[in-house]
Length: 212
Image (tube, rainbow, N blue to C red; front, side, top):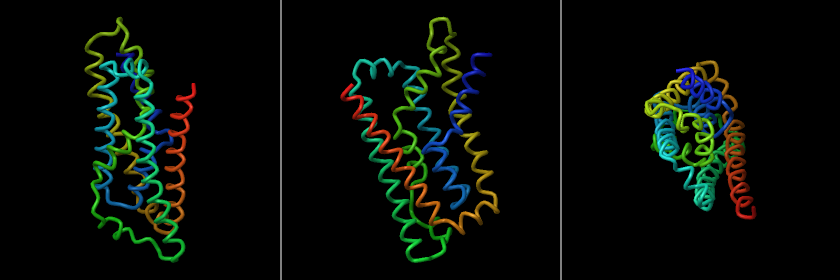
């Protein structure tokens, strides 16, 4: 039980570390409805299920034997993050140039599949697989019980959903949403820039692995 709690605690700390998932949830919670943000969180949690299952099935061993698999995943993930980043950055620049206040209701009406957006954002970072392989190293050892893998496969995605839902509740408070509406264009520009930075970071690491 102590091993399970240790892994959950490590995952909790990692969840709140700055990254595409946290950034997307915070932006959506401040500018969108809680229902749509919950769809994003559900998509992210589904992505966690994929990474957890792949890790517990030993997919990391395959990646170690064929590094090009991770390189391809990193390049494709970078493209998705770059596309999202450019959309945020371009939208923020247009709002800033036109000096139009952000109308949150307009953003809500845009037809989007929020679940898929959350899922692809999470899956766009294949380094998550490396993270889980290191965190789950004890669970994958021969001394760990077989029940521990099953428990992790259920508990980690549920923990992800609950922690991110709590983050959403905090960020979606009326005072924070009012601040976002006042500085929406600047936040979109910063968010877009960060997503582009994440994309460049993935591409750089992928290229560096090629020459290693």
